[in-house]
Structure formats: structure tokens, C-alpha cells
Length: 503
Image 1 (cartoon, rainbow, N blue to C red):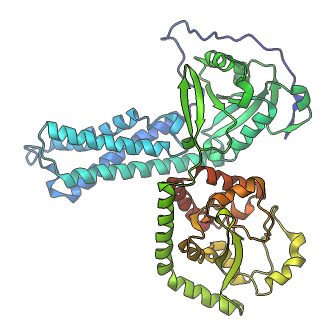
Image 2 (cartoon, rainbow, N blue to C red):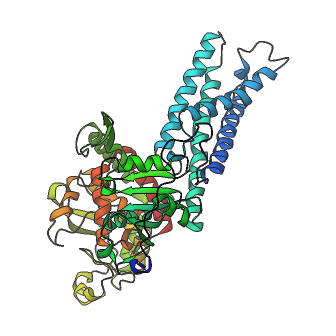
Image 3 (cartoon, rainbow, N blue to C red):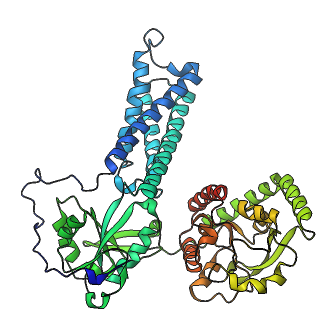
């Protein structure tokens, strides 16, 4: 941590740019941040190769692939040119026109994949129109296999590329945006905490330029250097930044943000605005310009409607099928528990569920039968804060139970709670009913059913603090969707296999 005292205030320097370049042709367009250029080049090669490979697969699978092309039996050059060159090139062009290579959507969030799917629909429509216009009798199975195969391969290639990008960002700290935060100190620190929670996002704050309250900030420990009274663009160049993030009320003065945008024209420095909408996901935020004033409209959380019915249906069907398929595994675990410690196989504990209703959760027993009696002597050794008691080496857990906890197999009987509608596959963690009152912000997590897995599980599980767990649960309540549930379920597989934070 650094202290504000070690940095001096310098008088502001006049801006070197008035927002009017001498010529549109001489305007500098090269951005300071250049990590996206090789990344986009790799995506272009991957997408072209995926489309060409999908065409090859379709041609190998169907003998009638070349139907509709006259003379292809003697000279298949034209057919192969379309299959291996023009069609893949068309994929790349349509992906580009759908902004699937836009650096703002690469590496984070679902927008990149949505644009790929939108481009696939356009490619299918274009191929259909061209076949109809030229009266070419194409093989439907061949075209369908080539297009669907290309879509799946492109999505897979981008998933692998994103995984590699996240790995580089986490391990080496490369391929990231170096940000200078501008605003009051509390606002900047809040944005700093938000962007640094996810190293995979590639946002690295390197300095803070505070707009007021410098005297009050003296002596406060800060994670990055603090500056005040400086020309922002000059400061960005001094610290090697490539992005300016305006935090909260820093742009409260009319016209100030607009003048800053003018000053940055031609500099290659990006400008982003971080409003005070912490933990509100993008789909709930819409920009509605009115007479040049961009208004951020925040939609209400989706806590009812068709999406919730679909979620409940998915939960019940998945829980029923899961219980049927897991019967042999349940029998094996039950035998192992009875051999390890004489007592009941299942552990039933009251938990607080949807809208404060209490239910009894089903879990495989992982502790000795006298665990509750021994809890009083271990309270002082609690390794977490908040409402839960956790110990990494809890002496009340028998060996088989330790394995069940590490592998999360002890939670599989909660499928019974899901089938009965008391829980969901994805949701906030169900807390014991006798651990205190649910007041204030914590009570909001009761607006949805608790889940077998959730953001808390894929983000660290027992390694998280109580405040961080509550924040993740509330974020899920306010921003859940079916696509988000599927994403969390997919991430849960990796977390369970890694046994991270499970004890």
C-alpha cells in the first residue's frame, strides 16, 4: 500500500489539444493499447480455418456434396474454391461486419459469442439467398453440416483463445489496459476494488487522479500512486497508461467530460466512464439519449415471468434425471459413510429458503455423530467471519467425509430439495436457520430460491469473506438469467474438479 504524502501537487498544464485536428487525414488512429492486434489476427486465422475445416468435414461425410455444380466431376476447382476459400472468407467478412472482432467485446462477457451466433444466422441466410438466386441445387445436409460445424468450431476456437488470454492476464499481467482513475478518492477506490476482483478482465489501475479532497486524503494507504492538480493526458503518458476511467461524480461539472473527450482525440488513449452502478449487470442497463443527454436506464431485476418458469422447469427435470442416474453412486457413498462412522447416512439441517421459509436440507453426513456437541469447544478456532463456522482441518470430519466435502459429493442429495421446489440448481447459498436474523441487504438474497451452486461457489467458496459472499449472492439475485445459470453450472465443473475452497 502507498501513501498520498509521497506525491506532490503540480500546477495544471494547459491542454495541448483543443479537440479540432488540423486534418482528418493526419489524425492519429493508432491506440496506445495494442494487445488486441495480435489477438484479433489469431482470431481471424482461427475463424477462417474453422470454416474451411467444417466444409472439409461436410464434403467427406456426404457424397452428394458437389451437387448443383456443373462439371465438378471433371473439374472440381470451382466447387473447392467456394468451399475452402470463398465461404470461409464470407464467414470472416460477416463476422467483421457484426463487430465480432471489436476489441471492446473480446475476452470478457457474452457479447462476443452473441455476435458470432448473429453472424452465423446471416451466413445461413446469405447462402440460402445465393442458392435461390442462382438456382443452384445444393445438398441440404452438406450445407447444414458445413454451417453448423463452422459455428461450433468458431465458438470453440474463441473459447480456447479467451482461455489463453485470461491465462496470460492472470499469470503474466500482459495483454491488459493500464488505467488512470479520475474522481474523488472514495469513488476511485471503489472502482479499483471492482476491476481488480477479476484479473481476467485485463483492467489494471496504475494511478489515481483525485479531483477534490486531497488534504483529507493525506496519509491514507492506497494501492496505487495518488496525484492531484495535474493535466490528465500528461499524467497518463507519464505513468504509461492507455485508458482514462472517469469515476462517479468526477464529471459533475457540465461540459467537463466532453472537453476531456475532445482533449483525448488523436492521442490513442481510451476514455471510459464508471458510473456509481456497482454490481448491476450490463443487460439491465440501457443508454437512452434525449436531446444529446445520454440517460442510463436501469431495469428492475427479473424476479418473475416466463424466464423464472423456465428456470423452475429446468431445475425439476434436471433434479429428477440426476437422482435416477446417481442411485448407484448414492448407494456406494452410503455404504462408505456407515463403515466410517455408525450413524445416519444423511444430515438434515434447517435452512432459510425463498421468502424466509424454512426447510430441511439434504446432505450426506460428513462429521461424527457427536459433531454438534463438540462445536462449542471449537468456536474460537473459526477461520471465517460472518454467519458460518469453517475450519480447514475440522477434527469433527471423518476421512471419508473429508473426501466427500473436497469433491462436493456430500451436496448431491440436495437434488431432492430441488425436486421438491425448496432449492434451485443455481442460487445464493442456503444458510442455517439458527445463525441470526436476515436484516438489511442480507435479506434481499431470500427473494430467490437458494442453490446447490452459485457465484459464491465458482468464486472461491469457503475462502471468501462473509461480505464478499453476500455481495456475490446479491449480484446474482439482481442479475440472474438462464444463460447466466448455465454459465455458472459450467464453471462449477471446473471448480469442483480443482477442489478449490472446499473444506
